[in-house]
Length: 184
Image (cartoon, one colour):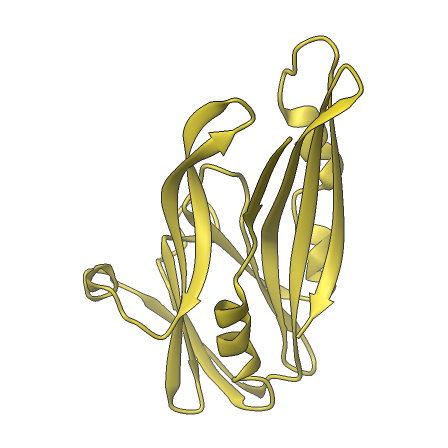
């Protein structure tokens, strides 16, 4: 059985934990043109500190074929591509009360035998008291990070059912998908 784990690492989680309880000054992202998304990076400024949510592709096994798969990291390092961006600033100026990670487990079965066990961080939700800000990984291959502001934002994510039904699997192949919320 193939096991793939592209959830945020412990070092990523520690960086996110470090901003809980601090003022979220602003989020900076690409201008929203066709969708509310930013390509490859979102800049998060909190209490004078800046962290970056990156979405870069890596060649990985995608259910039997090698594909470019977007993998998220949270870092303090500013890569050169950030300076090339014409970011839009979304002021927040509210205290971060909680950060949640939406962790997803996808399992593939061939003739009833499990062949894949895949874990991915589907999204990050930052609670700032009276509302939330979410970052969603829409699909495996996309470097886009969907950004939303509102309430109960986990409900706006692409559904687990849409993921299990998205592919035209061969006869005898079945995919299951479940999610859990990890509160930092």
